[in-house]
Every structure is written in C-alpha cells, then in structure tokens.
Length: 366
Ligand SMILES: NC(=O)c1ccc[n+]([C@@H]2O[C@H](COP(=O)([O-])OP(=O)(O)OC[C@H]3O[C@@H](n4cnc5c(N)ncnc54)[C@H](O)[C@@H]3O)[C@@H](O)[C@H]2O)c1
Image (tube, rainbow, N blue to C red; front, side):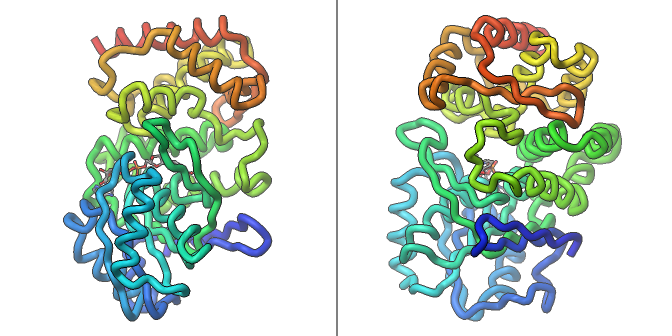
C-alpha cells in the first residue's frame, strides 16, 4: 500500500481510497464481505482475469461477476436498466456490495446504479484506467449521457472504498495512458507547481507506462484532487478549479460522436482556456508557451477530422450560459500551479482563443 487517503463527501459518508500495487494479496485489505456483485469491464475481464479473480477472492466470500462493455453508451439510463436486469438475474440482495471494476464509464455506471439499487447499496470502486484512478473514481460524482449529450444527468454517491491497484495499468494502451495524464496535468496545473514540474521532467525518461502508471504519482494526483474537493464536495461553487479543462471538453466529445477520449478533450480544452487567460492579460505568454510545451507529448493526433468552426462553439457557449444562469466562469492559469477564475468571459475573446488554438493545432497536425 503506497497511500491511504480518506475523503468525506458528507458527515455520514467516508471513502477510504487505497493506492498501491498488488493490493489483493492475502491480508492486505481488511474487507472481505459476505456477498459482492462485481461489475467488470469485459476487456479487463479478458486481459486481467487472474487479477480480477484475486480481487474477487480478496473482497468477498461469495463473488458474482457481471461483465459489461465499457464506453460512453454504457453510462446511460438504458445501460443502468440493463445492468439492473443483470443484477436481478444474479439475485442481488440488499446488503450486497456492488463493486465496479473498470474505467470511468464503468465507475460512473456502477456508482449511479448502486445509488438506485434498493435505494442505496454498499459500493466499492476498483478503477482500472489511469483516468479513473486519478479522477473519475474520486469524489463520488457519477455522470450519465442522455441522447448523445455528455454527462447531462448524474448523482453524488460516495463509495465506501476506492481501490487503485496500478497492476491493472499494465495492460493499458498508450492512448489511454495519455488520456489519464491529461487529468493529472489538470489537477497539478491549478494547484501544485512542484508536482507539475516533476511530471514534465518525467516526460524525458523511461517508457510512458513506467513514467505515469506509478502508485506514487497516482497517490499524489488523488491527494491533489481530494484537497480541492474538501471545501466543496458537491461541486456546487461555480468558482471551482477542477473545472479547468472542462469549458469545451464535452462539446468536443459530442462533436466527435465520442471518437475523441474524455482526457483528450480535456487536454484540448485546457489549451483554449490557458490561451483565454493569455488574451485576457492574466497569464504571461511564457506560462502559456510552457504549458503548451508540457502537454505537447500527449496531444491526440488523427482523432478529430477538423477543428470545429467557431460558430458551433458559440452555440455551445450560449447553451452553457443558459444553464449557468447567464455567466460563463472559466478557469485559467496565472502561473503554473495556480488556477484563477475569470468571471463572464466575452465571446469575442473566446472566439480568438479558440481559433488561435485551432491554427496552432493545424500546424502541429500537418
Ligand atoms: N464522475 C467523474 O467525476 C468523472 C471524472 C472524469 C471522467 N469521468 C468519465 O470517465 C470516462 C472516461 O474514463 P476512461 O477513459 O477510464 O473510460 P473507459 O471506461 O471507456 O475506459 C477506456 C478504455 O480503456 C479500456 N480499459 C479499462 N481498463 C483497462 C485495462 N486495465 N487495460 C486495458 N484496457 C482497459 C476500456 O475497455 C475502454 O476501452 C468518461 O465517460 C468521463 O466522462 C467521470
């Protein structure tokens, strides 16, 4: 065990987040329960069946496995209904544990389902992607897609346990590693300059998996996220730094019909937001350039046919304004490690920032 981090969503709910490697060896976890239903990403089941078996044996005396296909279509109301049917077929009982084993789409799906099953079932998350270990499984938030629109509904439901075993990351493709790095960049960029510098320095050493899929780095990123969530666990404040990278991310994911990964969209959105800060005069050009250089190794290539035209973004911004009561707050950087909220950014500035990033990407991609 590299770290155990506790997070209180409400006074009554505490999540114990355990980070380490080979957590499911005998006696490491003090939590065998009577019966647990494991909702497992079918790819993880295929690639890591030994580890999933060990996990099931370590956690429950009676373990039942339901395999689910991961991806954005899984985290929908239809996906929840399907899963509830499968859990019913496995004779799910009140008091059973629901254990999600997979990436962010599976932890969102299972977290939401645990909340509605018997009006609240014990829940544990075992995130198997870097993205889910450092972000999606942390904080109790679950999002579902509706009608092709990203995370339009959702809930807060805090799991009792989150078990981040980096052994799962051994089989993660490079694209998924980079998508996870995007969320690590996000949280360090707004709150922790030293960790950001260490992350950038690591980019020149070793294989990507050895650089990023490490328990110490996962633990550092989880601590940084928990530190930002503690003051606002329901994420109600419009002034929350964790919104960095999310002004345009959902728009980009929807526009690409989800062929772009969430982490890739976050990365592109961060570039635009940092650029907004530069144009607004709060982010020195040197910081903007340093940020671009730091994320360049993880920029997706070949996933977007073209940078979407600004009139489409304008529609998305109008919708965002309507949802948020007229204002679009945006997180920008004043320096690396320090996020800052710009209240109500004018469209003219957003448009320039958007087109400028599009032109730079076009040069990088061609
Ligand atoms: N609720 C939150 O607070 C929150 C925060 C961030 C992201 N998210 C959500 O998380 C999702 C993105 O997470 P994700 O990238 O983990 O998605 P994902 O679940 O789709 O996983 C990505 C891919 O990796 C595969 N995979 C999973 N574990 C693997 C392993 N160990 N080895 C090999 N392949 C593996 C999956 O089968 C899938 O193809 C998005 O839907 C996003 O909206 C939610």
